Length: 474
Image (cartoon, rainbow, N blue to C red; front, side, top):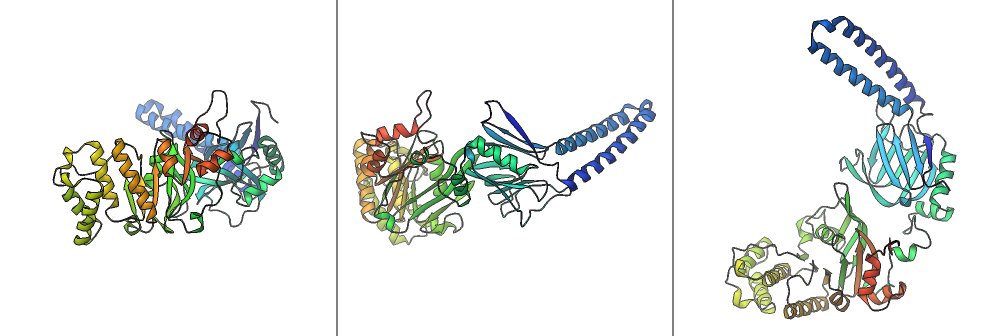
């Protein structure tokens, strides 16, 4: 194993014959131009500072280009005990934590990506990143976690940055590189091969597998098709990763609890799965339909109760529900019938003709519940269930959710109150720093992690890190 501060350099352009010939020819051309410009400076300098300034700019540009060429000719990847630093001159610089690398092997490149005029390819194609100076000596790196990189895309989404899970690079000494990478990362042949077989546990050590994502045995609901499915969902805000490679399923007739500390990524996830926030990567399926491809029709099957009410306060409740019915394209008689039912269930009849601005926060959250349930959705998403509700109202809301569950509806809720989640939810998912660290029934998860006392100690074990210790599930 290399020492703590060890570095090894692996060149990647020494065998790139076409690129090096082109660059050396360019060096000769630029050197000749520098000679000409230098001569002009010597002859014309006394005639004015404006010309001198122009020539200085040209000289600086030439020096900058020559330095870029030098970096390309001397380009090398750097392997340390903590990361693999990929470099292709000034064109590409990517730092990959070694914990992200789940597999590496030499491959043949067919078909090859589009190269620029000097034969270099630095671009993304889907979730694959090319960092190549030639078509030979190619190493394929498979990542266990998605990595955000800056590189132009050749796919349908032509953004300047995106998430990748596979990287192709050149190395002049591929055998030595693979040997040193294997020694440094500690990957054995079994796990290296598992990465290329698209295993769900790619890149994890044997000790980490049970803790990374505890999953309870298959439930009765899992025999049916999921009403809500999230596949590899990720969201970046600039360089900040809010949600990372999140996948889960929720079934009809189930109350699913989504738990996490403040800032763990719960609200971001909920906004992506309700169509309010476009994910950086991943898919949200509602009754097997892609939420982001099917337009508004599929979104009407979701009722969303946000943590903070989003309502028109200068309308009465009756006016607001009638307007919402029209926005949902509901028949007038259906809107009226549903409105009367909801006003009765939520005990809001006496306030239906008052402006909502006069309501308390708890009553405004009741209005959010009425708006979410008005079109009789198949999936109800609740962000922070207990926020602003007093004890009697919370008990009413619980009864409403249980009744909806008994009707075969799907309930997806987040809450900070562990007691509420434990009593209401059939299964829970616990998220930490944007990653799902537990999924399943509370009893099964507690048993698998040897935790007594129910959901609260289980939650604390999974989301907290003791001083000087590695956090569970990381």
